[in-house]
Amino acid sequence: MPFILYPIRIYRSILFLFLALLFITFSYRASYFDEAWFAEQSFWFIRDGQVRSELFRGYNGWETSLYVFHKLFVYAGALVMSITGISVASSKLVSIFFGLLGGYLVWQHGQKSSREQQWLSVLLYFGCGTLIRYISVNRPEAMCMTLGFASYLCLDPPHASSRPKPILAGILASLAALTHLNGLIYLLAGASWLYLKTGWRPTSRFAIVGALTLSLYGLDAFLDGNLAMLVKQFLYDPATQQNLHLSDKLSVLADYHRIFFYGQNEIALTALAILCGIAFRHYLNLTQPIFLYTLLLIGSFWLLTKSITDIYFLLFIPWLAILTAHWLTSYLPAQPIWQKKAARILLILYGLIAGLQFVNVLTENKNALHTEAHNALLANHMPNKHAKVIAPLEFFFGQMDNYKILGLTYFYLLEREKGKIPLDTFFRQADQARVEYIISDHRLNASYDIPIHAPARIGVYQRIFQDSWNTIYARQHR
Image 1 (tube, rainbow, N blue to C red):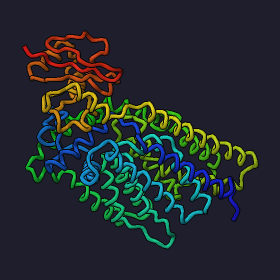
Image 2 (image 1 turned 90 degrees about the vertical axis):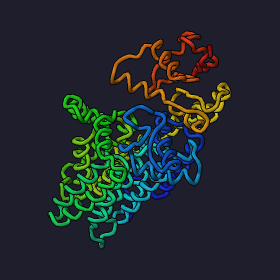
Image 3 (image 1 turned 30 degrees about the vertical axis):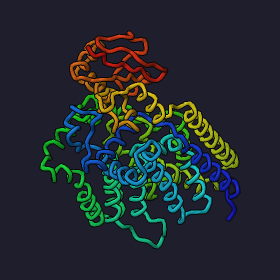
Image 4 (image 1 turned 180 degrees about the vertical axis):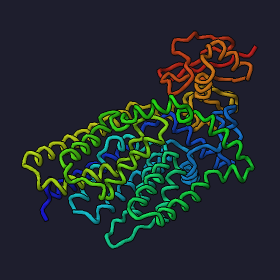
């Protein structure tokens, strides 16, 4: 059967190009500040067998034990870094693996479809700018997305002769939730989909095994006899606050659409899906498995999400890519010639936006700070090893064994809760705590703000180094 939109050689060539560019971006990939936060949790699990945080010592008891975190992701990171060592590059391997695995699963889903749909869905997946940007970031969304999609494949198997596997689907959906609590959407959407498609018996099996697997979230606290601390940390975790206050939750619900229109990366796939939905609206119905699941997934996240950010778009990419490819390859042949030409132009624009994002990532990599090398440079100006240091979170990489580091983000969180901390008060309290060095963060990545033009001497602290990224203040002994 001839391909409708482009010859197969075009699909093959573009996919090869996308994958080649993607692998090129992995080299010296820029790091985001909170990658160190997740890496530190894995670090302490490797070191002590207990997830905790020195970067946030004194906050919610995190320095003793951390019970509310992205559990499966942190454990997977610990497994990888126990083999590869702790570094910026090794901390990204889990996300890279699951981002690539997600593309393979999209390909597998296409086995029951036309060859063109299979190729196009994978191209839309790897060409999504959000995936290109975040596939190499040490965050749990890529892992969560892939486990959630694996759960869907168990409900809607790629082979027509295969039967749904609700038990395995429930396990995988709950593993997605253990990776990131946003993964609860796969449990909610999966249970709803199963009930509508098959009735209550398979749904109950899915729900029971999913609930039992999800209960592992509290296993560490239970074994420590500390379930009360888990509840306390959940209620006071900064990330959960918008789901605990009605006004904040209503604001998130009202702005929910922004996830799909955050920027050009999200708009490209969203707009393509919407335009196809409008053009082929007469063919759409809820008996189509992936269409129904996608609607349930979007509705589930609307109910459960606590914030609006572009990285959450990852959680929908496989479904939007497959759905769009299915609509184009199934319904376009019966449409007027102008719609076929318009579809080809839209796909070219989609590819151009993907290319632009590759350029953006490569430019970001080129201009980004080499975290470990810069941390070593800062450490050269800080001769008192094992001293107390207040620093940006990323100072963790390469320096956690050399200093007792408290993150600047800790004070950022204190300001959110208790109000502005004046600069002189901040430095006076650091002196009282016998902090030897203070490193500012001029990028203000959720960090307490020590302005680049702050005085050279503040209290007993003297500026000893400054560049465009950081300033070091050293405590002057009396």
